[in-house]
Length: 78
Image 1 (spheres, one colour):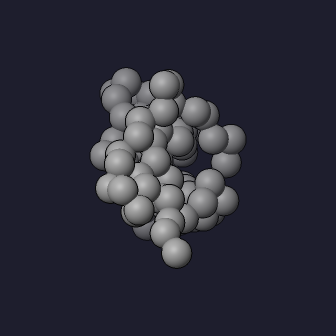
Image 2: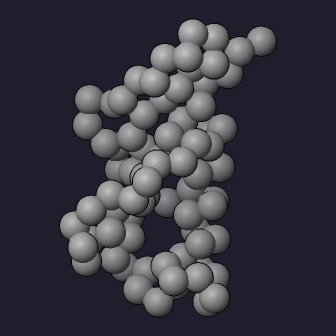
């Protein structure tokens, strides 16, 4: 059985740049991780949570090792 991994990136509106992407098994898993990061007082994201937005940017297929960027990043309303 093969898997497709979904890649996400956080956009920082204060510096107008996307952060390094990371894989998640689903959109829901990435959204939960993002919510936890911006809600954790000890995390830098929590200092300015309105500056950060989660985007879905690519897929990676385990079966053929293809990294497939999306045509345009998809805003994930987390």
